[in-house]
Image (tube, rainbow, N blue to C red; front, side, top):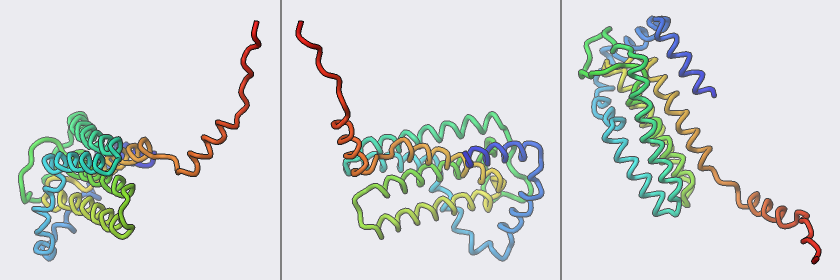
Amino acid sequence: MAAAALFLLLAVLAGTGTTDAFDAAIIHVVRAPDLHELLAPLRWITELGSTGAVIVLAVVVLVVGWMAGLGRDGAAAALAIGVGSLAIEVLKRVLARTRPDLLEPVIVETGFSFPSGHAANGMVAYGVLAVLVGRLPLPGPVRLAVQIGAGLVILLVGLSRVWLGVHYPTDVLAGWALGAMVVVLYAALTRRAPPGQASGAADAGRAAPRSDPPAAG
């Protein structure tokens, strides 16, 4: 609900130009000359949120889920990535925000700006990966390392879109909010009851009173 509310708020504010000053301030900080060399690797990191990258990741989560005995979770993760990508493209065309022109872009992108597809795709793809890895029978430190890595990729992909000059910061925030909705929905729909709770429910079901069979005749 919070992510949905944030997305709607950003859509309204960006559509009315209310966020222009905020966007301009963040863009000028990110594109400061002193940070250029430090942030230059973002030109390649941004590809981790591209359509090709998330398609590969969808295949990865599908295979990993199947190999780990979590085939339903893996299939649902791949489906979430695909549905999320389609939803982003539809929203871009409906909202039709033009690309920023405050600074010379590092690369040239076509299409509309709001929400950021790379930011949203990154949130969905690496978010569902983090959820799936959290359910695998792996050592805790390994799961944590993968989840932290996924979080860093999400953050850097979003930052890269602003640094490259192809998105406003509010585009990125909206992309993250939209992606978070998909990740939370995926996690909720594929969540399993704890073993103790499930067995307790089964025992309660067996102990429940049952009607007597009808008497003969």
